[in-house]
Length: 455
Image (cartoon, rainbow, N blue to C red; front, side, top):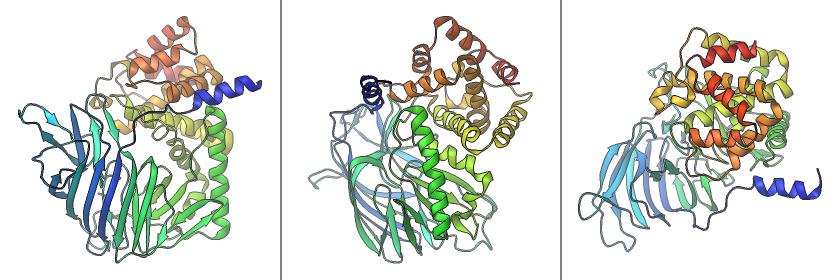
C-alpha cells in the first residue's frame, strides 16, 4: 500500500470530531467501604440542549436536591424507573407548562445512598451479584461506568444516546480505604485524591483495602500476581490488542487496567470491561492468576474487543446491545483461531451450534425492541455470532473486516438496521447483499441456513 493510501486509511479510521465541549462532571464524593455509604455533591456542566431526556442515577440513591448553577434555587424534579437502561431511576425537570422538560446547561446534584456490605459469605446468597450492583464486599467498593449509574448520566431519549463518557474533575474521599482508582487516571495510595481528565471518558470507581502494581505501562489492582505472571498477562494482552488493531485498521487505545475483586454472592463469577479497566469478579484466592489459564483466553479476547464495540463506538437503537456483544464475540472467535488454537475455536463454534439447535429466533431485520431477543444471552452471544460467521463464509474474511471497519467509523446518528445494511452494501455487490439479507438477516429459519453454511 502506498503512502497516500496509508494516510487515507488512517484518516478514515479516526473518530468523528465534534465542536461541542464534552459534558463535565465535577465535585466531591465521600465513601465508606465499612458502612456501605456514598455521599455525592456533583455538578454537570456543558449539558447539551435536549427536549426529551432523562438523567440516570442508581435507584439506591436518595436525592437531596437538583440545584441551579448560581446555587440559589432547587429544581422541582420527577422520576421514572428506567428499566432496560441501567439499575437506576430516570430524573427530569418539568418545564413551566408541565407538558415538556427543562434542561439547564449546568445542574448541581446532591445525593446519598447506603448499600449492603457483604463481608462474609456465611449468610450471602448463592447468586445475586451483577454488573449493575454498587458492590461493597467489606474490603472495597466496585462500580462500572454504565449500569451502576453512580454518577449522573444524561440520556437522550430521541437518539437513544447515553452520555456516560465525561470530562471530569472529582475529589474522592474514602477514610477507610488504602487505595483509590478512577478510570483514566493512575490508582493512588491514600484516603483522598483528586482525579481529573479533560477528554471524555467512562468513569469506573474502585476503592478499598488493596495493593496495586504497574508493569510495562499497565496496572494490576488487587491482583495477587507475581512479576512473572504480570509480564505474561501483559504480553498476552498486547498480542490480542495488536491483532485487533491490525485487522480493523484502528489503533487500540490506552493500556488495560486489570482489577480483581470478590462478588457479594457465593457462586457468581464473571468478567466485565469498563474501558480501560477489565474487572474479574470471583472468589479465586489466586486473584487474576486464573486469567492465565488457557480456558480464559477467549473471555479476555471478548472483553478486549469491547474497546471497539462499546468504547470506540457506542451503538444505539434496538440493535445496539446486540452489536456490542455479538461483534465482540465474533472478534474473539476470529482471534481464538488465529492466536490460541483451532481446537478451542471449533469447540466454541460447535457449542454454539448445539445451543441453537431446535431453537427459533426473531430475524435480525425484525427486531423492533430488545424484548424481541427472547433469551438475550442466547441471542447476542450465540445466535448472532453464528449469523456473522455464516455471512463471512459468503463474503470472505477480507470483506468482513472491511465491513466491521465501516461499522466503527461511518458517521451516523442511528446505528440501526438501515445503518448496518448500508455499511455492508458499501463493501459487497447488490446481488450478494440481497442473498445475505434474504438468507441470514430476514429469513425465519436463518439459524438453519447459517448452520448449513458452517458445516
